[in-house]
Image: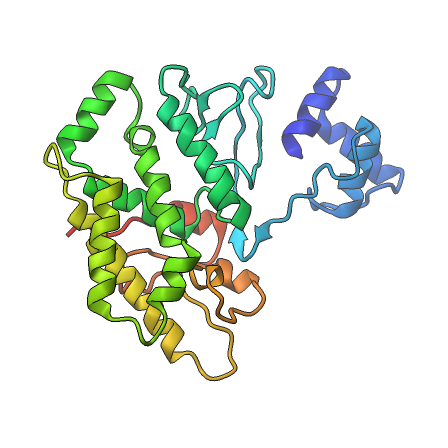
Length: 294
């Protein structure tokens, strides 16, 4: 909203604050809140925009929808911020990496475009945000499973950041940890824990083969720790109470997780056993959300 207001005002030879002042003085939007419905409606009418403009909610299924840099080509060269709940870290249309300053081009890296399509088709459609706990788990699993030599070789070839070169595995592990079938099976009291460990070992090796000093067992260990904690949350929930967990994984099962609330949007460190609560977007962004590599 704010970046649109700034661009619209510039095109009309003025500043957004003067337009807001006019809206206040005329009684159209007497509010100091930048996201007040009256102000949003006034700017929609001024710009002749569709009624759906500026209506993205702050949270979806208990997950924050984070403001971030938009694709520089989508905005025609104008730096802009916005909420894109159905987009990961790649602009598929313009083939740009959105997770780093400068938004490097990805024309020579189809594997990242494929990973983004998988994210949009399999994760975004289930309201898994690009920076949600399951995605953070996926990124950490990718980082510890891929060997330093594998990551360095990819970076040398691609000239991209670490986060970019591990994106295919990042998305694959996030898909694994949010799999409804897997989660329902893991949380079934009749499921043998040893069978869970064997399956996660096999799935981790499928995502990251044991070659070039890769260590998929590290990813498997992290997944086991998290999923067994999720299993504990499911088994120990009071009768009749909604079943929830810090990572928001149980909502992907057939269990009664209850309605999503803003309280569920409070982020916990994805380190197994961590107890650090991250209640706001600003606090979340300032906190370390990675799994311990010890």
